[in-house]
Length: 605
Image (cartoon, rainbow, N blue to C red; front, side):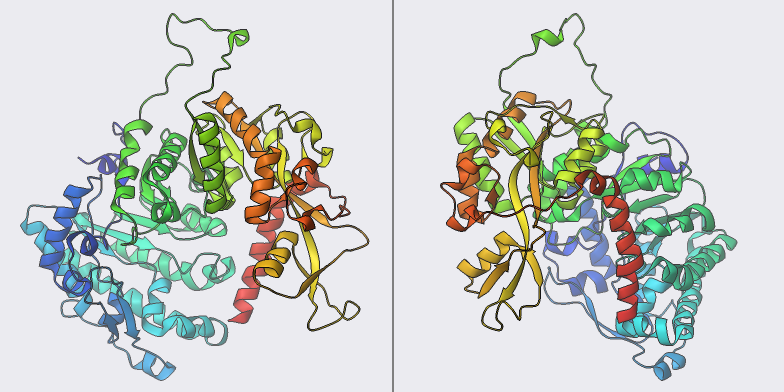
């Protein structure tokens, strides 16, 4: 029995399983045209068999025809002659209300998409493989393939009955396909994979999800269960934070259903939201898979495993979304390799027979330092090269963007990094209060203004970013100028490098000055190397260097001597309650996204 199969039966396998969503990856690796792969199930099956040899995992590689609903209802899909081409619909079945109402539910035995997927399932059985899978997606998601995105968004507001009608067509067709599979293979052999990309908060509001998607997804699940189907997997694409009630309360999922999520949803939050009845899977960032190094993919995968491996309901390591042809093969290998280090039990704090005391802490520099950051790659490359040249310490740098603080919090009991480098004062205040940071004392700390450092040494500001008002001098005078807002470094970047005629405006109340900080992570593996890195990135020399190269304003006055002249302009700093911001920032952002951004998106549609 496979490891995922064990989880589905409520058993615990020997390690965390891994699921690789490689259904579109074979054309790239085997140099098969997309057209040959998707339109010939025999070729697709052989290709997937080779792919499973290349990338061993605990899941089988599936086969689905992209935009098959579009094809089956009479639309047209272009598959492409190249191995890297992504199939896309070029003509939808129903561009108007009249065309929609004329559509008939296809016969899945002869429909171009469904018949090929059915044939693939029978090829698997011919080769001794059990089970048959259907990739259904939610009816709301599949409605795009029939009426298109523009009609879907317009009709949600103006003709909601047409959206429901389209979803009902898909429900009916999905059941015809399911009954075809049950007749051929038996209900106990059929598994159904649902995905919900169109329902994320980025595209529709939680209220729209409740009105348009949830009823049809619920109805389809209920109908499948009525004919004996009891194996499901659910993938939540995007941010579904305020939709989790549906999977927790409404959807009648069998126990031990696997629910996978993207990076927009923190795993621990989803775990609490769905409870321990179901298996949770995710959520290796596809951006890191696309653009990161194998080492960065390895570290990210290992972090997730360490965070979730003891989850009571079970956990499966998976990518946040489908693994596209743009992802380097080495990064897929790195993702699987992380399991070799991520599933064992934790070593004890001390080796048996070894005595240690706090007074005997070593000051010797470790060989490496692991840095979590949100700064741009070009700037990091410059810093890393200089630091390694000066100290001989290897730097493993993982750029996690806006998830920086959440990453450090999630690893508090088992830190995977040594330094956090980037983000604002409020973030560092909160991390200090939560016990995520350790105090340090770089040599330049006394020169810093109190505004740019923690009084107890838990964090230090290395870059300041004044947020300024500005106007275009070629269009208006200072007296006529309406007010725009940008960062001072962006203004001068555009003035100097792009020749834009911009001039800053200084307000009487002062300017908001954001501060990018750095700090040592508490209980990190390489504390001495971490302190050395902090010493380096905050030094006057490095602050001046990135000021000249990247228009980042130094926090040290001594660095301003060798920085662009405009950076020395005196700026009145507005008093800001960063503690209050730190305490409420997450709630304010959530409120803005859920109550204003989603409302604006729907209004524009």
